[in-house]
Amino acid sequence: MRVICTQSRFISSAFREFIPNNAKPTARMMPLQCGITTQKKSVKPVAIFRFSAEDGPGYFASFLARHSVPSTLFKMDEGSQVPDDLDSYAGFVFMGGPMSVNDDLPWIGAVVKLIGEAVGKNLPCLGHCLGGQLMSKAMGGDVTGNYVMEIGWNKLQAVDSPIARAWLGDNVSSLVTFQWHGETFSIPAGAERILTSDACANQAFVIGKSLGMQCHTEMTPEMIADWCADWAAENADPKLASVQTPEEMLAATRNNMPELNRLADRLYSKWLAGVYPHLVAAGFNRENC
Image 1 (cartoon, rainbow, N blue to C red):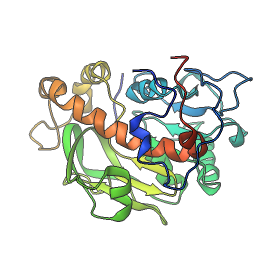
Image 2 (image 1 turned 90 degrees about the vertical axis):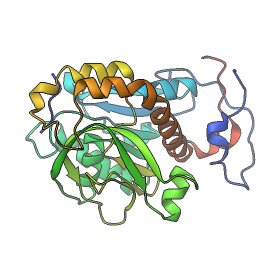
Image 3 (image 1 turned 180 degrees about the horizontal axis):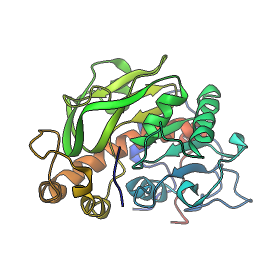
Image 4 (image 1 turned 120 degrees about the vertical axis):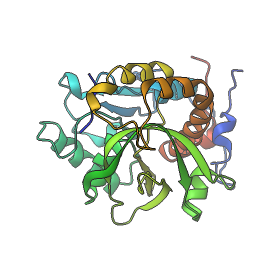
């Protein structure tokens, strides 16, 4: 139950605008393998941390597979241990979950410590909802109750700043995303907010190569249907403008999912360009996919 407190040797066009103008392609890289990397591969995998079986990587996993990016999934909900060696991974991704970062859970301290060390080394981190809250906490921010719950399809506004435009594009003002949260993070020192909304001021922040989000860009139609099954247990007030009923969410999914996927592609591509800057310049080989 989820209850809250065409093949090409070269890089996908999604990445091309993130390649520096002075970047020079290197020799053709070894093909990447979809999923977990093997020892003979020279490319480090992305580490993904799952905290609840219903809060998996979803669309993000599909994005990595499309671009032949190797990954390793740590199922914290099944007792996986936080890795000690950060240098074995190219980046770190934190999914959502129904718990609070303020709960007394055995893995929270270790995950927060890992995030702090990774950001300190400028290793890219990416957080979704709970993952974004964990990132904020790791960097000295606070996670508190939001003044209203956000459940369902809601609009966000892009902040008018150079950093926001670098991540979201030049011609973006409002965006539709999926939400399911009752808490919110503060923007930690040194970070910059890039997304906001009427119901929750802090929807996403950037610090260095890292992105923390309150919203859910990883959603799939199947995940939304699964979460809707737990809606009643939230005791959310459907009269609030920020709360939708399961019927409303499911009815809007078909029309809103393409826009959500476009936003996810944009953000994930920008993030991945920070994870593998030299390989992005060389080009991702997709022969194994």
